[in-house]
Image (tube, rainbow, N blue to C red; front, side):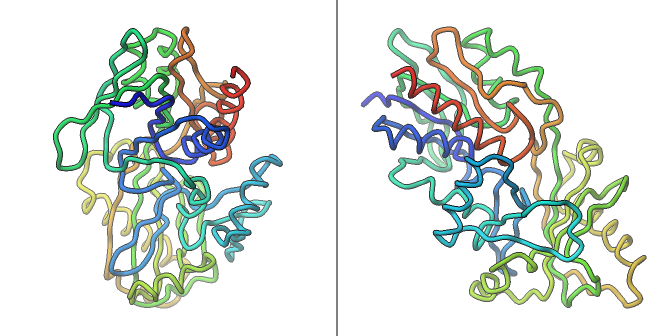
Length: 334
C-alpha cells in the first residue's frame, strides 16, 4: 500500500479547512469520514418531507479570515445571510445554500475523502502509523500514514490518540455536551410572528427555528418533492439531552415536540397544526462547555495532531480557526 503523507480523520469544517490548505501547498492528503457526507455539525438532512438543518443553525464571523471564507462561499452561491423574524443577537447570521453543509463544499476541491468509514484504532510503527477502520457493510479496513490529524470531537480523539502518546491525556479536560435535535413538519404554518425561538431557562427547549425561513430552503424542499407547509428544527437543552441521551429517537422526539407545542400554544390564539412528520437525531458531542484553550494539540514527535472547535470555543468559526492554525503551523515547518 502507498503510504499517505497526511491522513485527516473527520470531514467537518476543521478537517476540511486543514486538508485543503495542505493540499493547496502540494502535500499528499486524504480524509476518512465516519458519516456519508461532509460538514460535521454543519449538517443538513434530506427526506421525503424536505430539507432540515438539524445541526448548527447559522454561523457568524468575528475574524477577517473566517469572513473571507464566508464571502468566498457566498460568491459561489453556497452561503447567504439569514434574517429571521425575532432575531435576538447582533451581527450577520449566515447559512449554507441550499443547506448548512454546503458551506464546506468549496473546501472539498481535489480532496480524496473516504466516506462511511469509522476509525477503530491506530497502531504506531517505526516509520509512521497504520490506521484501522470499519466501513459500512464491509470488513475491517486499514491504511498506512506518515502523519495523522484527528478533526473529530475531543472524546473520540482521546480514544484514538491517548494510547499512543501521554500528551493527549489533556483531551480528558475538554467537556462536551450532547444535543437532541428534532425535525418536525407541520401540516400548516404555525401562526407565530417569529421564525426562531430561544427560550429562557426552559426545562427542555434550547432553540427552535422555522427551517423554511432560511434563504433557499423553500425552493429546495419543493424540488425534492416535499409537501410540508412548515418545517421546524427543535434542539433540547444540554441538561435534558444528557438525561435522555440513550432514549430511542422516536421517544425523545415526541417529548421535545410536546414541549414545543405547549410553549407555542401560549402565544397563539389559534390551534397548532398537526405534526405529520417527526424525526429525532442524537448529537453526542454537540457543544463545547469547557474548551482546551489552545488551537491544536501535538504529540511529542510531531506526527500526531488533534484539532477542532473544542480547542477554542464551541463555534463554527473556532473549528475553522483551529484547522487553519494547525495547517499554518505544519506548513511553516516545511
